[in-house]
Image (cartoon, rainbow, N blue to C red):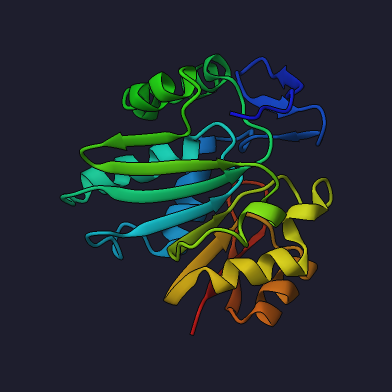
Amino acid sequence: MTNHPVDLEWKPDGVPVSRQFEDPYFSLDDGLSETRHVFLSGNNLPDRFRPGFHIAELGFGTGLNLMAALLSWRQSGQTGPLRYTSFEAYPLQADEIDTALSIFPEVHAIAQPLLDAWGKGLTRIDTADLQAEVIIGDARETLPRWNGVADAWFLDGFAPARNPELWEMPLLTEVALHTARNGTCATYTAAGAVRRGLEQAGFNVRRVPGFGRKRHMILGQMP
C-alpha cells in the first residue's frame, strides 16, 4: 500500500480532522447519521439493493461509508456479496481507522475484517457478503484506468473549497462514464461548481435538504 503520510488532529469527541485539508473526515454532529442521510438515502438505499449491486466512492477516509453500507446490506436481507470500490490518495493507518470507527459501536462491531486486511497492507476485503477494494492513488489517474461500472457513487472527498482536485470537471466526467444506466450519485456538498460539473457530465441533478448544519446537498441520476 503506497502511503502518503496523513497529518491528523483528533477532536475531543474522537472525530479525526485532516490538517492538510483542514476538514473533518465526517460530520462533527454525527458521522454515521450523515452517511445514512447523504449516501444511503441519497442513493435510495437499501431499496435499490439487488444481487451484485456495486457502490463506488471517491474518498475512502475512515471506511465509515463502507461499514454503514455493509450494515444496511445485511439488514436488508441480501444474499451474496456487496461490491464496493473506493478511491483514496491518502490512506489512514489501521489503528487510525480503528480509533475513528470506535465512536460508532454499530459499525465498529463489524469492522474487524477491514481492520485485519488493512493492518496487513491489503487493500482488498473478501468475505461472504463483501467484495471491497480500495484503489490507492490520485483518482484523476486511477479512475480512468478502472474498468468497473457502479450502480451508486458516494462522492465524499474533502470539501471542494479545500480539495478542489477531487471535484474538477474531468474527474466528474469519469464518474459519469463509470456509472450504470439509471445509476446514481450523492454528495454532501451543494457547491454550484459541483452541481454544474455533474450536469455537464450527464447526470440529472437536484438539490435536496442536507444533513445537520448543511442546508443542501446534491443528488444525481444517470438517464
